[in-house]
Length: 432
Image (cartoon, rainbow, N blue to C red; front, side, top):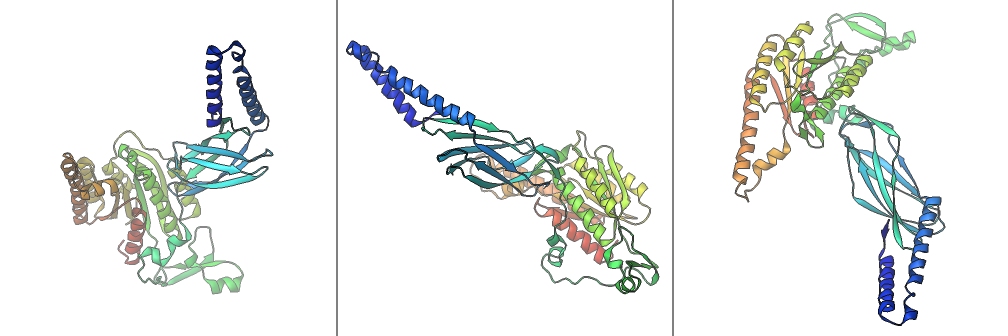
């Protein structure tokens, strides 16, 4: 409870009456007691009224949330009283969420409800309680603000991102350039027809044969062109570093989940390995819906470790698992000298047989610091450190490109689309 200006003025008047009674005639000595008693009675009535007939709050949550993607929640407040009320609310979101925690002022008519929509961004995978909502309402006598806390018990689960409809359109694949999908078959000659099985790409369906047989039929070609993709995710301690609203690992798992889904739609087989100093989990190659679900399940459970990422061990494990030429995608950092040296050795190891892609994040804060005007005596040193950081990253990327490795660098907002575009480009040009 906190007193309003009206109550404070009444208390001031009571104090003045008490002073007058202390120094004035004896009959004035008890006058201050009457307004004090009325004030206490008014505060008691306000408190009892709000306790017996509390204001009702409800929070409407999404069925599920996707990591790093804006989600909306709706807060509804119902006024059960016969008079208008004023209300202030402030949300305290869980550590796994980013959202607006400013104070919001509400004005509700008698026996009416009002709703507001808030935007939140999930930053950590897993189940979480959305928020604790602190609210205080003005009593009907306007003597005090009465505080309370609304603690919703419902939990919502955050998953890795999935492809949206617009992500598979031609404009997204080649950044607005004109693009015509290659409609040629994926083999040299037609070998046979068979019944459709779960996981078969839609492009392999023979619609004429399906219409004749009244059963979904797919074409089998003599030489299949399906691609094997192994995703290797850095889950070492550097993946804890923040990059925008998410840690690096959050961006890595989103890219891996969306790329696996797109590859499955193309008919390609995708596998997953998450590494720190050793292999944390592995999903074998597959192109069915079950394989994509298995990858997403492992990504939902992935947590950063306390040891460093070992790309050389990851490359050895990938070379052991992959039986034919494949696309190996590293989602990792390029900044640290030791990590870059091991990554170069891993790419050399894979180069004779496989095509490697290294995707890494560019820290936008460091890029801005590099361009910032110096206004403080320490700013030149900060700017020089940022330039050295950027130079080291570009030098490592250039060295990897000389080894035949495709390097994709981008900000947290760009990297996802850049990796998918690189995959589509290599696939369309049959570079793998």
